[in-house]
Image (cartoon, rainbow, N blue to C red; front, side):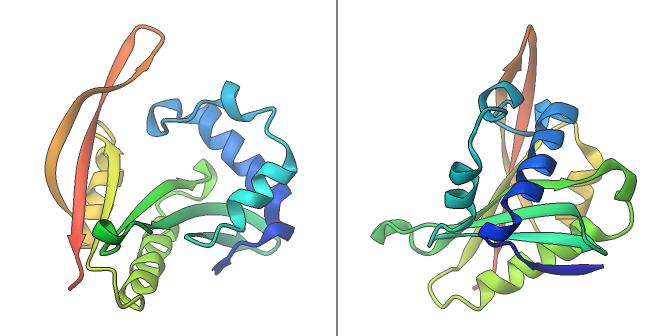
Length: 166
């Protein structure tokens, strides 16, 4: 397995995996499949080429099987913060350490940015494997956002987590 920063040339693979994630695990993302399915490749390229967000991809041979994004805050008062978003590992490759490697590499990336002192993430409160992963990497829960997402008539709570790196 190889992990690397995604670029515009990865847009098609990224969009495909992203749509799979939104379709298979809608409760894990604030975006929906319906909102993103018609997004152009150019919009995906812009997403991957942002100056303040970094998306890592996990590849097995040429197949993109996992992704995670670090968003660095740019406003002066919150430049000490970054947020991990859009974490997904293809269901056939879960429990192989891919998510752990992605989050570890994003954490290292954040530690190498002098202004960043803490990293935030949000996880569906009922997603025990993801919560265990984040806790094992030092993230601490600091709250629950009740009824954070509503899909049809079902509500999902989000657990808010933080890792202090400085």
